[in-house]
Length: 512
Image (tube, rainbow, N blue to C red):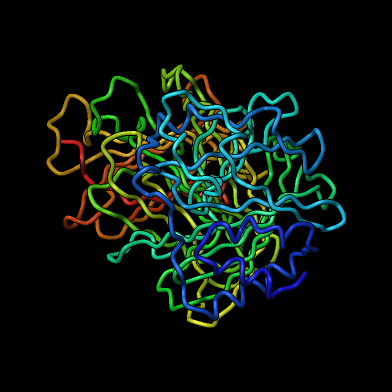
């Protein structure tokens, strides 16, 4: 590949440069993409110009989804098993994205944008869009074209429909300064190269150029559908990052989801449905082997939690509650929403899994973000490399020896029939797992409950739940001030060995 040619293409402010025939059938490799991204980081950022911005703004959410890529224009870079269709630009996806098809000989060809490859209503404002604009992204369909199972659309977002065919949470290429006082930066994938599967088990391979004011990146995605081990899809990611400027908070392998309320905090919402969330907790498998479960919250103000670790084995935003009766929504099926598990495939060193929770009053806003923050500061000229799999699963991988949290509930403190103590709430946690088989109240199971910025009140109850394989931990707590109580809890056996994962939470006295 002629590197100077690709640099000229990327830095042009005219989208016609992306479609130039000079790039057609040019040899391309991931090494070329890394060189391109690195060279780009050494130059000032040039924002992408959106042709006809007033016109593109007329293509609203509803108008956008009426525009469909024609089936007979479908692309087959990896054969009939992975049909590719392209997205039209619109109000929420205005910046043009270049699409290239790469063949099995590493030759690439540009896919020119044209209204002719789309079906749209006669009264669609898209008819007036100028030729040579640019696509918004792409999706990969199932072999029968019904429906798509993965899509890349908007900034650096991508997602799959998971093991039960229901879209929910999203992944991102990178997160920059998320949840801080300064505005968040949203780098974008400005170009994609789509080609035949390079590795065994993959359905298709994709390469992407990331561009932003503070960062550039070269990405390789290996996309696998219906993996038997993960019981869902797998997205294998290789990310080479190049810092264009200093960044205060670099979020690697970010996941974005929605949490409004659950059985834990139903009193905080007024909707008729019992629960509304795409994910109900953050799961972490630490580098030392500990399993951690942190139920999600809908806080009153932006909340940031960091879990210090070294070489984590995995983390993810998980939808553990998969019972339809707990949602009663037969339109969007929250019980079928996919979980996403980040599994590093190289050593990530020291850092922290960070969870950002943002207040929301409805289900239309993605208010939950989780990612890895490396200990090393991200400064101009620095380079980072991360490799990981995203497993789009029903549930997170479970420990073979520890019971898992299956329910978290919060309510008024005290004892029924007695005066309700002021400023006290009760937390009830249910654990489930094979480790409880054959155990009863005489088996010596003990609770470990620790708190900071508050107090755990006696008595602490732990007992088997009748008719189930679950054990319940119940305790009252109160705050020391207006800040949440940081609580850590798990169960141990008669030998003081942990038999459950560790439940952690920032709890406030919210029920009065």
